[in-house]
Amino acid sequence: MKKFFSNIKKYNKYAIRSAKAELHSEVADSRLNWLWWVIEPFCYMLIYTFVFGVVFQNKTPYFASFVFLGITTWDYFNRTVSGSVRTIVSNRDLVTKVYIPKYILLISKTYTYLFKMGIALCIAFALMLFQRVPITWRVIFLIPIIFVLYVVTFGIGTILMHAGVGLNDLENLVRIGLRMVFYLSGVFYNIKTRLSGTLQFIVLRANPSAFLMSEMRKVCLEESLPSFEGLFIWLVIGLILCAVGIHLIHKNENSYAKAV
Amino acid sequence: MSEDKNIALTVDNLHIFYKSIEKSSIRARWTKGRQKVEVFHALKGVSFELEEGKILGLIGRNGSGKSTMLRAIAGVFSPDQGTIDLHGHSISLLSIGVGFNRKLSGRENIYLSGMLLGFSEEEIAKKEEEIVQFADIGDFIDRPVKTYSSGMYSKLAFAITAILETDIMLIDEVLSVGDKKFKKKSYNKMRELISDDTRTVVIVSHSDDTILELCDIVLWINDGEFMEIGDPQTVVDHYLEFMEVPKEKSDGSSNIDLVV
Image 1: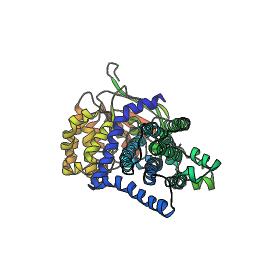
Image 2: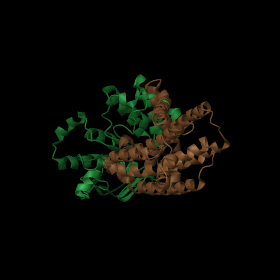
Image 3: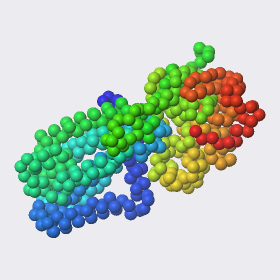
Image 4: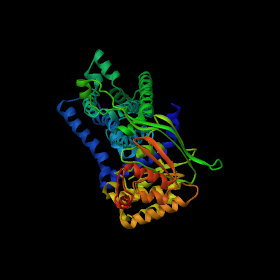
């Protein structure tokens, strides 16, 4: 663990610079590209709001904001988890030429995703203002919620990153898994009203994406406090996943350069 | 070796195996189970010491472990057995193309590669113009590296490592890079760098002329095993004898660009 923190300290500047450059290159390809960071989630929100709000007559209050917060959380989770599988292979040029602690590559990626999530959150707040959602001081709890989200996804990401080096088709499996998690996360429906009993408990508690999404909505839309107990439990799970992932990478990174 | 000289690099009983992570897929593991891991013993206990300011030539036929050795010394992977001691010197591996991110501009890659070589952003900023000048690739410096020709790619790679002088430089077949003009320029730059008394250099080359002209000592390895180290002329002669190449013929080989 000590090695991990000294590496972070040493390479954090690199990770930030690389993340900035990455974002910059997305904009550089075409001037309007950054607009896609806004347009894409916004359009998904419109689609889901129409399909599930109008067609399926969902009565969840502030449904558009509800959906948008869901998409914001989901996008971060999805991007990090699916992106992690190919991290080593897609950075082959780098990995085979210089030494870099491999999770720095993932950290750099998460920075770009965090930035995009920040933009999405700004839009979410604009939307909430537009829908006249009463915004309370409880939104400050977004900070610990996002922190837990970061830790959990990073933990999953490091483990998948390690596994992705040796398994060529892990990406396919992860894609299927993520699709399942997506539908079970309640991006466009309220798990608390649609499911009941044990099923609701399991879906909401065992799926970090669903749990954190619902906590986000609690503090933003429902004027209530998050479940501190749940956040704590997921933080602990997240830290354990991180420890396992970092350990796997430290132990095996020597052979990554030879395998890719 | 005399005792009063500083040792820049100590390689002791270096073993490198290629194995560990076998490329496979989930499907293959399902149907065939774990496959037998094939171990390739790339370096079999090579030891040598290099004094500060000396230039070591590394020779051996294709697949004898020369590039593997350079990568191990550069820290891309650590030794499976034995040790490599850099005595606190900074090091860079100049092979065909340092670790570039192809999506990013050449300029951004100067910073990212520089940071991975252990330089701070400020140090790189000071040298940036010099690197751009030396690379001499015109407007391409601000375009993504993926648009570069292989010549431009190598020119930039060479410029970065040549200008951001590290204490120890590892050079893998780059003297044959770029067009005639750049080749001459890089050769001269190399001579200039090499003439610096504090810089230690390890060169891998298939050109006997280059080795004989530039190197102070030559190390010959064959199939991962240490063969001989010592005076360039003697070692090269033994090597050529071993390879059964008549001397007259080998002189012409310097014009052929070999890529490892």
